[in-house]
Image 1 (cartoon, rainbow, N blue to C red):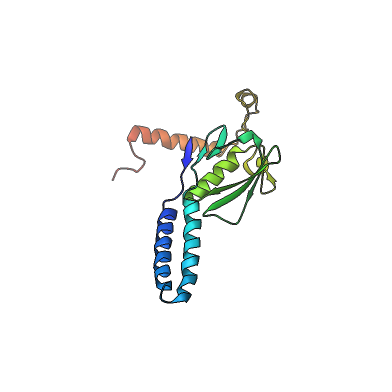
Image 2 (image 1 turned 90 degrees about the vertical axis):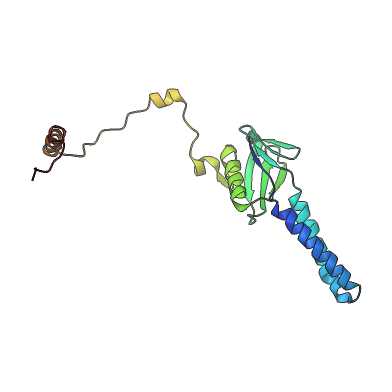
Length: 183
């Protein structure tokens, strides 16, 4: 199981925005136009706090879990990316035509890793309209089919004369310990 937790920077940014909103509100007591940035900073603080308090996303071999939502990989039929990378926003369409918007407010590297895992493990899905098998190739063949596969042909790299020369040099190296004539 791999866990993806929200980045702590969202909580820090929310605290800073809340502090600036309080300062702007205090300034608005004596100068009314300062209320505009106070309201905007308060709205920003609430939005960033909402992102920072998102639940952890867990990825296992059988399912994806975000908060209380448990999504089996077999039920994911479509994965559509939005233009957002951080926070990552992905629309999932399930087998019963239900649509789920997955929001992961994490670091960019973690968001890319989570997106890659979602795409790789949803083997029955379309990824941005392209079939999974076309992007990642066919699923691995069972061992029985691999044994029956035709062995690859052997192509000689050297001519017989060159091969004899390599053998001669190899034996000379083994007996003398080096190829150079002694000086």
